[in-house]
Image (tube, rainbow, N blue to C red; front, top):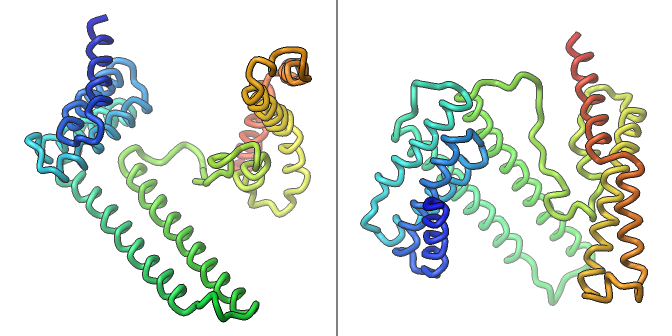
Length: 289
């Protein structure tokens, strides 16, 4: 109870600090320590991530205002989080030095800063050559094509960055037991707007005869994605109507109950997800035989 009270006080201190970075730093560090202690007690990757994120937030603020809690002190806590994570999940006793962590941080920052500068210069150059007051339709198309090329190059840059991060993880944690792909899913934006993009872009096959396989996944995932999407839409409509949304004055309550019942009657989501997972694992196992 005492620990819960302490963390609630710390959260309130952070909230009351507002935009005052000097007051934010100690509160962020306390929260980071709390999550790190929690991660040590019950191993959980999410808690290690939260601790590291809070420490990095404190590090940025400490640098900007030259806080009395210096960069080296905070960096040591970040290193401790790395070491504890590696020990728990990779049984790595070798540890990782402050210099290694600092070099990784600096290299990633330098990479992003350089790429942002290059892309900004390219966009500025495209805009400087384009006058909206006196352009033909063909010139508009050329302008759009050039901007599109920039966005494609940004995508390639993102892939290179993520690949670097993955290789760093593998160098410490080791390679995973099976092949994998890193993907950016449409559902990160709005799942109900792109119910099939995750499916079509995430399930990758080297076999050119993909048609039957993708249809299987579409059927199984439709039993998950479509009912969830419809239920979210109805739920938002109920919210907009307020109390009337759950009354018999509108059909929304009836629709919501029907959709929720459908997700039970047609089989729980977990059953369909398990079926998809089993099929994918079966394909992977067969490809290795």
